[in-house]
Length: 499
Image 1 (cartoon, rainbow, N blue to C red):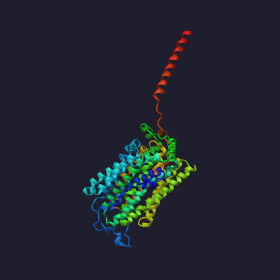
Image 2: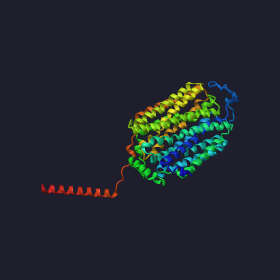
Image 3: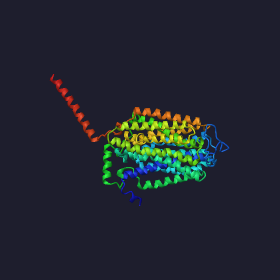
């Protein structure tokens, strides 16, 4: 039935939609712990209605609902919570480059399947690991990170095959917007479930792990690494994608990765720096916004889930708009790829910096704080049709490896930020959180400046490997050269005898 429903849709759109779902599910499993941990950990104050200095008062309209019930099972310190939240990235950083190399060699279909299967199993085991001890949970999160390190390289390897240049903005935005939808579900649905079930946090991990296994079944049925592998591709779509492959010099069998060219590429290192800044700002918000809203703003768990989801709703809307806009600008030749990437990335850095700093100075005005977060994170949606697809611009052939390098180094921010936040917010006061947001804003702006000075949207010379040498032609050329040298020697001898 599903195959009949999809029969009239171009296959590249189906592949990209499944990739969107993979990205969404991976982000749900990755970050649902950020809101679950607010119910897993017991308050440090015996009186749950205690208002700590430097935090906001509870909602006077309905104190019974606004004062949180302390249902936590664990007594982890802020520093320990920071270790738990950052441990995912310890494994995530390690498997980025191997994931890119493997995706290019065996195909993105298989590496993406593994990247969802491993976290799904880890998600299902999370409640058991947490109750065994905090270090069991840390170890499980590291393994989940190992698995999810293959996600971005696999998606870029797939997009390099399935997303033509003139559709790259829209299709790339669609796929990577799955991260935002994942954050929406992770916050909104998780907050409501925790409220309805009175803090039964374990249900989140069972639900999301099961959803990942269902996606895996769909991917095994309808996912393909390359257009030439797809048996249901129409003749017109096949020719269209073959034309695109020829246009960007796509190789069917790649020679060894040109590491020297990659590691000495200035535009690539500018992209790495920008990714570090983006990830620093994004992971600060994704990982710690639920905690800020509950511990400092004193929202209920349901309010925290809804309000923490709204910035990602805005980001999704802006990302889809920006993806269409950049394709329109390029189609009309109103700007070059390089200029569009720089402008859109600047908006995606400046907007969040202003938004999170504004939210920190709005203090206890809950509506204004929410609006600032929505504005700032919404403008971060310009990142998807710019920075996120820039790897495809630089090297369609080695997009998986390039994305792995960029994403892997950028993800170091995910290791640093949760632990740094745990060190800075020892008392969970407004002033301590303001320091967190000011640091994030500074990193966003400084890294964007580096990107503007170094970025490029052009295919790099190392993308196209040198043509292989024909052994027969090489032998003929060598034989011809030997004949030339022999003839020269004979001429010299004749000239000597004539003298």
